[in-house]
Length: 342
Image (cartoon, rainbow, N blue to C red; front, top):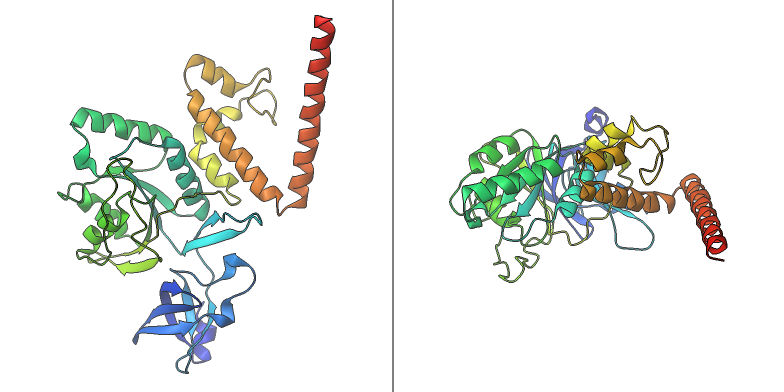
């Protein structure tokens, strides 16, 4: 992919940090600073980001990134703006490591959100339960792992303690196989985990509050770090908001058991609410599927539809038709009730 740029005399490099229109790029000749003005379009998903492979000018003041190579994978979330824009967090990632603190109660719904974005990116998700040393006994820890495994079908679930080193060797082996991105809320122990994997205090660490286990944003930029056992790690700031961005495939992967059950529903467009012959509702009644999982699935699918509808006219039209249909059904039901009461 780089051959055409090599012929032009440009340097190959990988972006290890982006900061206000400039980036640090590692090349065969060392690390250099480059301006990204040539590749800063209006589309926020096409800006240079950490993990990109780029073509850089061999000299100049300032020196410019001319382009980035096609991305194998890209981790994208929606921004908090009303314009429904996506924000790219990392590119060319092999493993998405979702750090979840055991110092506080598990938020399974938030784990499902991270996993949906991870699957959608094209990376292999891995859930890492941090601060395992704070769990009082092995039985409790086993139950917590089981809860997360049920929430994350097909995803490895690891427990680690950066304090005493338990589980770090397994995680390091996973991270050695390419590029990993470290994700999670503030206070999840990401910076401590990054330091433990790198083998030195490359990231500042701040104590989490005892009351809720949350911490301040120790990491403020996305940094690509070289691991001593092989592979590289992209550490990211704590994410307060984890909004979906066109992640229908990712949501379906997270809730693969529901998608599989839906294949046996009587109607191909079954909404799994009150339709006759719904295999998903039958699984709820039999106890095969938990109600929390179905509610979470519905919530994420609705959210994703709203995000897509803001930029896709066809989806907007379909949603309007559905809303009108449900409104008419609701109105008809009220008329029936009024007639009955009269």
